[in-house]
Length: 298
Length: 219
Image (cartoon, rainbow over all chains, first blue to last red; front, side, top):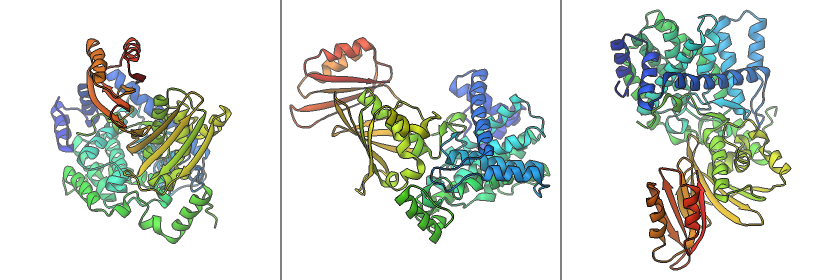
């Protein structure tokens, strides 16, 4: 094994070994951390259980400390169970789960950062929405997370996974690319197709800014976890249909990093611009400073 | 390669909402408690920069207190930290300051009980990682990831050699070391980060060196 530093290297290594990206990344993790496969998978099982508990909690309904968010995951889930949704059963689940998990984060619940706290809903939402339909056994679900983690490594080392460093495209964008890649693999896509899924997902969200209201990980972060989960599924399905990215995946990754560096500081987690400086957001920020709560009704 | 493991991406498991403002804040409280060595009776917290602006919405106050209560960032009891501290009879004061600071996420803690007092300044540097930057007026740089020794002593020739000799005989490697003093011959603080944990007997033998006031091991 050699150190895998780009999507291209990882895809080549998988093709040479005639195995999936996920299996290759598992071997890579065993190699560099000098850890046995069972130990890695057991640790991933713990992360998966944290994600499952967070989803369950969010669907039951939680609210944030500031009062700015909550109960939407429950709302979305009830709606999809009562109605025939335009999104269909799988995508509507993904949207509800993404929002639910990220609401738990905002409510000071326990979550697994994937790759960050503010984007922690996307990857598990997609996994939980498809695992029954695709009959993914527990091992396949852990593999899903290993593949997603591998994509995150490539993005973190060659671009950014931090809102302060690269805007929301680096957080939600990265999470979407991770989910799209893992889903493509679960659907039986080749390593090359998995690479295209990463490229498509990143391109869908390039330029997305991080300008949250009052600097809190709530508005617009939580709802984005839902819409991003739907985007990830869309990208995976586009790739399975044979759609390819015209720009090679590693170049898209570098473009994301470059856009992140060019992005003004006001739009990188500082709450100094964009959505955070709207009239309503400014009033909410003032209220939070004075009372510790935000009344969203006024 | 800054990120090496898939668990740097799929993790950490933490109480939300923010790695820097919540998870990092728990770790700062925890680091201060380790330096203080016990649960404090009186706690003063002052937030600076982005911490001062957003601590209420991020639960940074609850997080720091939970860390002082020895909780780690994945403890589900963190949201109740202030209530738990109150039930332990801890007196808490929480405030903010507009003073300029070098780093946006800075907190100053003043920990007290009948036996002693600690003034602590720490920063949350991103991704939940933290550093102590000042202890009792001495500039330091201590993280919570490596074992370290905090040694308070009276500045005089030969002390450093006598301390490091005790690490050498145990074959303990020093990774970083800083020494600061108020003035020549006055109180001084030595911070030694080590690759291995320092055995209790070695810590006890350091305590016997003339001029050493206190040795606090941190794991």
